[in-house]
Image (cartoon, rainbow, N blue to C red; front, side, top):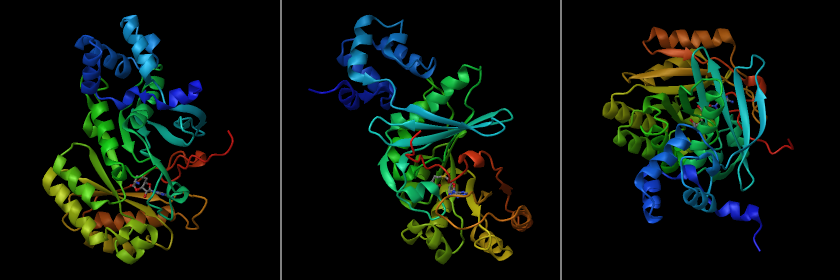
Length: 355
Ligand code: SAH
């Protein structure tokens, strides 16, 4: 006999369904179409999290919903707040056991979420904690969506709203392309969460075929590329996938993206003392990005367990920035937030320590 938790396992997650899939489902249940819209609004406007909360739906539908769907797959098991309380990292347990992390950052009027697309990551970048833990599995679109809805619900209780979503948590989003785009589409739906595409930023290590596909789709979502080095020798030593998708081809794909979308592209550069932080490194970067509509985001390296490199000094970061600036490439040094709770870039790892 199956245990109830085993039955829960095989139920689909309600957030995995698009509005049109819910409509089709309700038709197959011989329910009226407007009922599908009621369910959608309850999920994405009220953030209801169990069928019983849908007091506007008849009992028969609520029963079918609870028999066939789970309304949550993320169990918050640990919450850490930075000293100033403005950065909050939540560790969620998934139904099949592994855990993921998502981060809320409050900054002035912004409420930015950093969400995950995979359990672990297969890219194995040397300086990244997620890369160091290896790959377990892709998240489903619903599991990606639920991270946003979880925080939206928490913020709503304080009369606040999510303003930005950065897909920069655990995993390589272009290695889980379809689920990531489905999640964006679901959150973008105007009759539901209605979150504008321009308020998403997706960051990729540089999976060229997917950058091309993304360019063809002409989405309004912001694109960031984790570059970190301007030549193949250095980049491959930090980012193994560079052996498959070398720098020149990556930049060509970025040029194509800008040409097709007319959108500015962001390059991320984790600044590591003595590795990629010299004035010559900055000059090489300027040459590489010549004529490209772009912006460079410098991130002084955040500490991770299995990487020895050190962050560059503030002064070196400013010199690097000044060199780019001088040659006409806009560049910002990203504020470091939540480092003490392991919530900075490249620090998400969801250790399975007892909590
Ligand atoms: N896999 C995607 C999404 C992760 S985004 C990508 O690579 O873009 C996380 C960002 O933080 C990436 O730019 C990543 O290269 C960067 N990063 C990883 N480890 C870091 C570290 N220790 N310090 C600063 N940035 C880091």
